[in-house]
Every structure is written in structure tokens, then in C-alpha cells.
Length: 310
Image 1 (cartoon, rainbow, N blue to C red):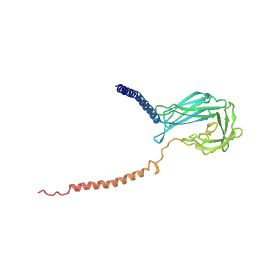
Image 2 (image 1 turned 60 degrees about the vertical axis):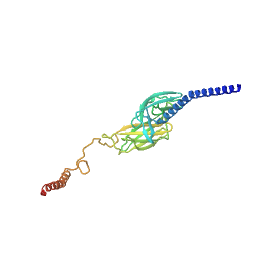
Image 3 (image 1 turned 180 degrees about the horizontal axis):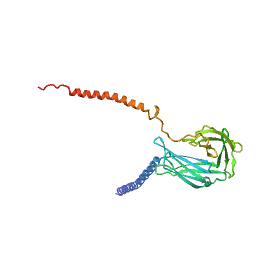
Image 4 (image 1 turned 120 degrees about the vertical axis):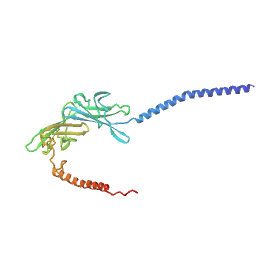
């Protein structure tokens, strides 16, 4: 009898343990499922975000300003897309601190330009400027940033008018230490401004004094007054980045920008009057024959005799 009672009590204890274990499973499993589903949704949302690419460079100009230029694009559905109407912030990194200089909005081609006065940036002890472009991201795109380090420099360009040939004198100086230090043995490009991209017309290499001379051709086309814009550029230097200076001179061949109506001719949109009259007469004669033929067909059809009805 005791043995039967012991077995019965053991069965009841096992049953209670199974019921308790089932309740515990019901309590913990939904939380784990929800946690897994939330993490999976977060991972899926992160994977759906667009990862943009940010390119950033600077141009030190002769008027003591610096152009910050950034471009945003991303690969979407296998194609490279430009990202317009997005805000790019430009900052200077000073150790662990960041100084905000300004911001710009990308245009339809995904490019943003911010012009900053050189007095607003302060070089570090080594004379370097640590600059950064930041895109903070949004609901559809990840955040991204790009950083460049340059030293302050300045290009100067001066015109030299000759009897038969004109030239320019250029000078490159280093401003990283606060004093003007000539930069020798550096190749510079001389350009003339055009509608789309500058046209390279000469090259020059600085001497020990940081100076160089380049001749300007006399057959360059200018505006209606003969003015041309000359540029001297240092592109993608490992220390100074991009540096340029420009000057306008009346050294070009005057080209009128006024649009005049061309006279009537065979190669223009307005052919000669005699050709128009000849063309109209020929077309009238040809199509007149067609109208006469159609008219005669209808007339013969009306004159066709009818068979008498039975």
C-alpha cells in the first residue's frame, strides 16, 4: 500500500514539474522571439540604408580664401547616382576638438562648394590644417565623412607686357609658418579660362626664389573687348593640395558675343526665295495631278450606266 502511494506521489510531482516547465517556456519563448524579430528587423533596416561616398578637396585661392569642395554619390541598383539637396558640413579638426566652419547644400550634380576666409582657420604647431567634410546621414542613408590635411600656400601672378610677346611672372610661397617662404622646384600650369574647363597653354617650374616666367600666345580668343582670364594652378600637391591664382588681361583677339541673323543661303536655315518659289511650284504641280485623277475617277463613277431593274 505504501509503495502505491509513493508511486502516486511521484507521478503527481512529475506532472507538477512538467506543468511548471511548460509555463516557464511559455513565459520566456515569446520574449526571445520578439527580441529576435526586433534584431532581425533592425539588421534588415540597416542593410537597406544607402552607403554614400564622399569626396573632399580644397583649393587655396589668390584672394586669401579657401574653397572647400565636396561631392556625394552612391551606388543604387548597380548604377552610380549623384545625390543632390543634401547638407555637407565643413569643420577644422584641432586635436580632440572640432571647429565648425560652415556648410553647403549639394547641387543637382551632387557637388557642394563652401568658400572660407583663410583667417578663420588656424594651423597647428606643425603648420598643418586638418579639415573634414561631414555628411550626417538621414533615414535613408548612412553617415560618412572625409578628411584632408594641407599646409597654407599662396600663388601670385603678375602680367608682363612685351613689344611682340606677352608673358606672366608667377610666384609660389609657403605660409605654414606664418612667414612667406619661397617654394622652389615646383611645376606649375598656366591656363586660360574657357566656358567648361580651363585650357592649358604653358608650364613653368619655380626657381630658388619660388618664381617662374611663362609666355602667353598672342592668338587666344577673348570676349568682345579682347579680355582673357589667365590662371596659374598647382594641382594635387602632397603638401599644399590645390592652389591657384587668376588675373584678367586685354591680350586676346576680340570676338563678338552678339548673335546676328545669317543671310539666306543654301547652308542656312533660311533658303533663298527663288528656291522656295521653285519648290512650291513643283509640289503644287505634282499634287495637282493627283487631285485631277481622283476627281476624274469620281466623275466617271457617277456617269456609269445603271442596269434596268426587272
